[in-house]
Length: 362
Image (cartoon, rainbow, N blue to C red):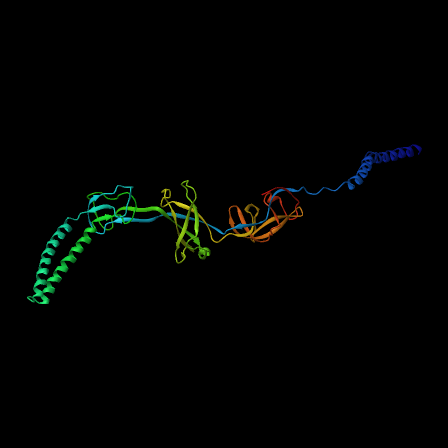
């Protein structure tokens, strides 16, 4: 009986020991965690976000002209493809290819043997008709012949003279002369060739001054006037050139909704060659004072454009309305004033109210 009771007490104490042992190991960790909780709760809060380094531009009123950009083509002041008015054989080529000729210079000669023979015949008939006219006029004064008889002889003389004039016109058509001073192109025919009115003999161009043809959108059609100055450049390395608008088409082109404009420019050094392309710019009206910002300050949006200004050391988001662009700047019609400062760099890192630090001004 006693032995059984002692064994039961041993088993009870062993079970209690096994329960207390894990608590002895875990209690220090639990106490340590409780001590660290107040320290974490009392830690200092995180500091403010660092300022974004940006470049800025001070908005100010600047004189800006509404400048239009266009692409055009250089054309000769005068140009023509020379052809014969009659079908005949070429008997002479007198102007060397690529040379400059004066107005009226003989370039090609066509066969005129039959016309010369007809002219000699008519001249002989005219000589006899003149004698008849002089004789009949004397007889009419003595009333030896009637007025009707004299009129018949006089009319015959006038018909012969008219025939001579007609032959002279046909002879002139056998001489192909330069209609104006200019540069001869390449010859397309040689001596002995039979030419017709559809045969191009050569070309002639006057490039002492050149025309610049270009188009402008229909919205600017009313702004373009003769006398306006244009500036243009070409790809041949020459310095920028100036010209003057001389005329416009009376109506816009329906297919492109654009107006054809023609300007003229000097070409004393013959550096501008017809057919070259030209990049053209000209002011539509006089320069006016307006607010401008650099183009890199603008942010495209679904409604138009926006930008960031600096207000109280922070980024201030603004919606703006823009006007014309010119030389890296754009006109701002609304959304800014002359005392504002706009941000031009690091735009992707900005947002409304983000602190900014100014690096340098533009």
